[in-house]
Image 1 (spheres, one colour):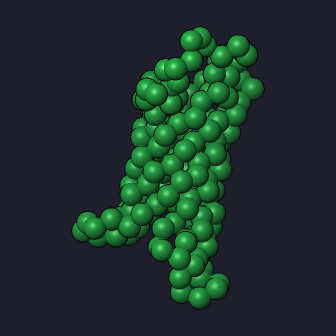
Image 2 (cartoon, helix red, strand yellow):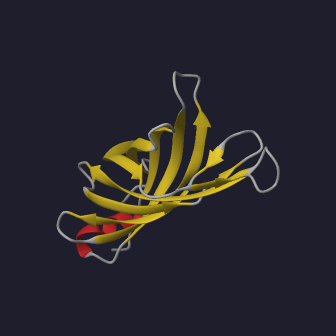
Image 3 (spheres, helix red, strand yellow):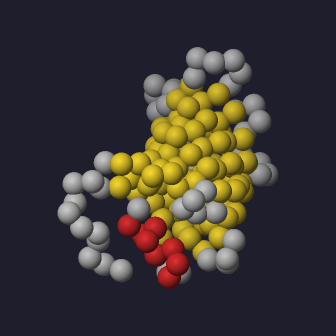
Amino acid sequence: MRLEHLFDMELRYVGESVWLRPYGEKEAAGFGQGDGTLRGPGLSGRLTWANHPRRREDGVWCPDLHGYVTTEDGAKILVTMQGYSILEKAPGEKRAIVAACTFRTSHETYRWLNLVIAAVEGEIDEETEKVRMKAYACVNEIATGPAAIP
């Protein structure tokens, strides 16, 4: 498999976020929403999103982000991202993020994204609630030809 850079992403939480521990101290759940920007060779635009992660007993947060991109040419693309957010041994309150991202759109220019699984890496600064990530399209190098669907 080969990874091709799709975009760099910067996200920020907007408004009130809710983080609860309804079943004791080990497990948690949350909800937050925000906006952001994507810039890259594969996709650029503004992202509007909501995240409702859960925290496992081992302290790993499992983001579950859903949103949409509005591209610079006006296309709308649905985005889903799920993965892991793990506390770093670093100054401040930072978490490393690894995730998988998928897309859905009916816009002809971006229909190729309907077949993309993107690997995502990044970091969240919990003090500022700002997130930086990079996304890479996973390209199958074993397949002998391109997809047979448009």
